[in-house]
Amino acid sequence: MALYALGDLHLSFQADKSMEAFGDLWHHYVQKIDKYCGRLTADDTLVLTGDHSWGRNLAQCATDLKFIESFPGRKILLRGNHDMFWDAKKTQQLNDLFKDRLYFLQNNFFSYGPYALVGTKGYCYEGLDTYEHFEKIRDREVQRLQASFDAAVASGYDRFIMFLHYPPTSIGEFSSPFTEMAESYGVEHVVYSHCHGRERFGDSYIGEVNGIEYHLVSGDYLGFKPERILK
Image (cartoon, one colour):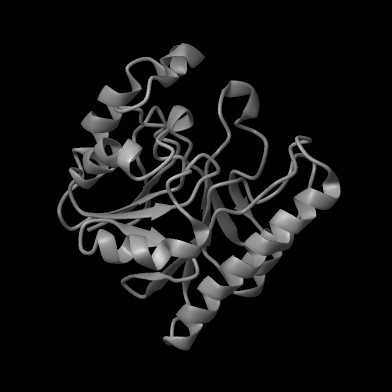
């Protein structure tokens, strides 16, 4: 039994948008995902940290989600910025629809032994919008993360693993509302993805910072092999 994480599968079985066009790190990426995720066991838990499919609705990503379902073990999905099929207000509907097959993490939590797995998409400033708009979206994501922590605490948990899609800090930041919340709750691991290409892998924290272990699990960073977070 182990807890693994991997992000940014960017599957496109029903869409003509293969990531192989983005360079050597993406060469044969679907085959690598199938190979490495297929090595997990039925007792393992895999958290997928967003950008699962290029499909714009459930019908267009049905084959991609079926592919994810085929991996051994429990699969917990976090919402990424490209996951158009996932309406933020309808997470419970997804959990009902995929009951006992896939688990969707937002405004809720899931258990792993003594730990609560909490998370949300997050947000960081990348210069693509005004700073005011960035703050509005970031603050909404902070509220969603708070709801995840609140649900876990109400159920008696005091040990946490935190998952984000976006990195926990913007480039050049040394702290953010996400890192501050992680520190305030004594989070042991923060796991994130979204950073693609060798020039982006150093955008945020990797390794131990202020007593928290930070993990970048973008698929192209890991060679599409899930990283073990806990035994």
